[in-house]
Image 1 (spheres, rainbow, N blue to C red):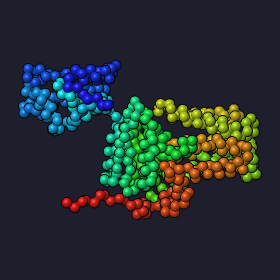
Image 2 (cartoon, rainbow, N blue to C red; image 1 turned 90 degrees about the vertical axis):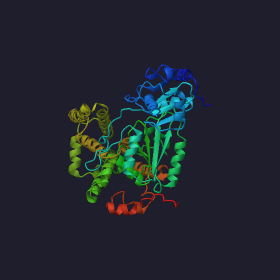
Image 3 (cartoon, one colour; image 1 turned 180 degrees about the vertical axis):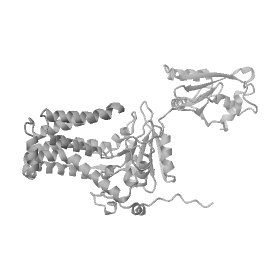
Image 4 (cartoon, one colour; image 1 turned 135 degrees about the vertical axis):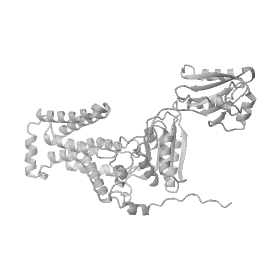
Length: 493
């Protein structure tokens, strides 16, 4: 049962101090006002949440009740304040009434300043939170040569405002939801009504309703609860920190999820070919954009197949290698104590360690460690006779190809798939690779994201949507295919 506030101010203060016992950043400021300064009121707020203390909210309340400049407040009575706020009269700051103790506690934790008046079983709250956040800057994980350079920040409302500025249409719908646990994090999801598939939206809301009552600190927590196959290495959703990418996804019928405290936007559903696309594909001329997209598809194939293909050909099918190249490979592998499989696993593992070290180290030294480390380790491995030069080249090409993929979580998936393919190539050669690729294709074809086939529009075949997968048609052609929903029709008076 909700607990109503008491009419005695000391009872309400005792309740607040009991709930926030041990919270030294809780600030309680008493006020005296009225005839002979006999009336009492208090302002309660968290000093760490209300950073803008240049305004005195209680004195502003009294200013609305008297005609002269703020003085000692001897003309203001508690009855005047109660009547003024009960009628929801306007104040210099947006104020709202609080009747329940649970609401008072929640508003304090959300950064509100609460004023309690003795003799009144209500409180008045002000939205006074002034939490410092990171300023809008260029996106760090999705840089572009041409296009907008506006990145999301860790403020939910600011991120939504930047997206709304790009989609100034009433059909852009947005819903808020507060999660459970200790964090009580605010999240929001948005979609473009009339563009989003109603079945996908219904499935999304159904899964979101099953979200466990736990702490949500980042959008990846929600991804884990929404995805169809949690054991699949392939991501079923996309991430972005660019507001233009989020707006484009909404125009394509996607649903976006935002969480307070993180700049990552979750885009769902996420399909296979969308993970190979970049926002800059639509900011360049058609010919150049298609060339870059084909290069990216080739990089995907190299990152997936090159190590296992080298193991299979060099171990089981040397007759497929041209004679001159085969002699060069045999010459470089002379004296290597490991088979091609062990050599590939060792070099791939070392490369992944260097890549992870470059990410985790501080930025000024991270790039230097990853570059210098790769050169030093590669050269030392060749001189020590642990690895052959051709294997160093294969490992380097595989790593560079994975770097060219726009989505980081998609590149991680390829790193996980490489090892099973290398094992099959070492055991069965080309036949093992055929089995591995077939199993991988079966998995991708059966995988779904919010009920949408992962390989769509290739499987199932949807000819009308091929225009933006392997190649990108001119933007004029894409704009003609997209139907922008019209706004609500005005009702006759």
